[in-house]
Length: 194
Figure (tube, rainbow, N blue to C red):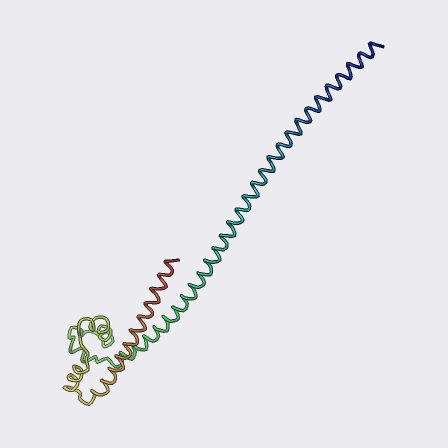
């Protein structure tokens, strides 16, 4: 029976050793899992922080995009207004040009500029606007009247009235053209600044 007790005691010792080894292994495994869990939690927290940063950047970019869209819409509205004004000025310019061609002293200009004899009356009038006026060709009242008095004295008064209308129309056209040019320059500067 002592032998039995001794073998039981050995068996219990072996079992105890195994249980202690298993307990030690379980503690090690538990500690390893806790360490892994802590690492996963840290990675999760890092990913959450990155996600929050990305969300903030996304929201900032959306706000910038919305601001750019607002500016674009404002510029489009301004462009549309400038286009309307430009179209109005073009229509007005066409009316002024029609009136100008109606009252332009073609015969007198042909006498002053005989080098344009092969051109049509409309081409002569356009030449005066583009070149003649800058080259010092004068369509002054006194000069026109002297020329007309020599050939057509009774036609002088209506021509003078027409010239006064023409000068007023040309002045108005020039002033409005300056306004349009200023608007286009301003719009171009604003687009470049954006």
